[in-house]
Image 1 (cartoon, rainbow over the protein chains, first blue to last red):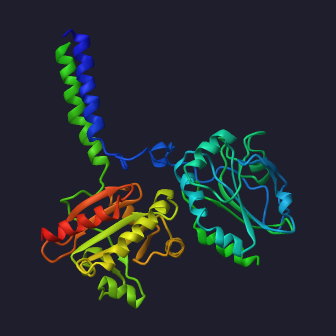
Image 2: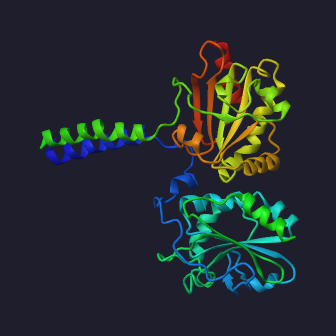
Image 3: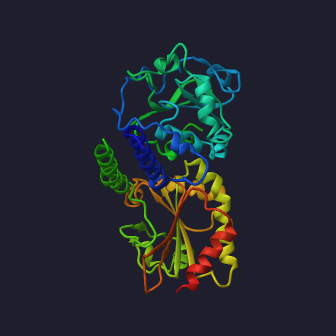
Length: 202
Length: 189
């Protein structure tokens, strides 16, 4: 065996050894979403300045959704309270958990006459691939990709790197902002915050 | 050249692999489950199931019985959501078994979940075994920040209290297989 072949052989053995004993959750099963997440590490908790406040009329937006429809905030005027969940980006750690959690609280939203709109600045193909891993989401997922982050910018939650904040807005049936929370991007907000806020506007 | 190749391989095995092992501190069979504290539930029926005398916080290895199954989950984890019905069937099978009921206990720990979130998960999936919040990821860190769901079977009998007998990541598998595993551990005692 020449040197090049020997090197290839040894490194191949080492790679196989690594693959065999390296730790990995669900290693014996199909690849899971958890193995496909890009971890950017700890980020600056908040990196934007709000442009709206509680009591303001919500800035209008119309965005394409995964179902092919264009969803406008205005279409819920007079009929539904709207909870907007901006999350920073697809395929990142906290975001990939947040909406699956909301997916099992549909009853809570409906009890409060509320719809949830999930928004990121990713494009539709990315959102499609990402959310397929979450199961069937009951709420519209909207792409604020182009003009990039325009809706996030109107609310003042577009970060300097082009991602959105982890932010929640509740807009009542009259189109008025009733609740705002911009969370530390590295942490998921407690579901109870939303529930309490929905109860408060009933 | 051959020497260099061997050195590279040895270096890989000596330095890279142990580093990976130490980075992953998930509980493993044979180790002791230590350092977990949970808030004692207030509901009398839950306290009775766990056999808790103390209030405040407790070590789950003090739960009465012979084996304890711990599911590390998150309300926000879609895999945990999909697994919830199977985990419920496991609990029901244990409670329906004369040989397992009372000897095998089950709890779930919701990592990064508030009490409200854990309670919602419990109600949504009609989970009958006790669930505990781990809002600040304290338990999660103590079990090596395992991905969820993650299952631990530990001995809680008097002779080898806290000894981990089995762990599993991801789907728990068939209920029958899990029950056989439990019976096997009980027979070894």
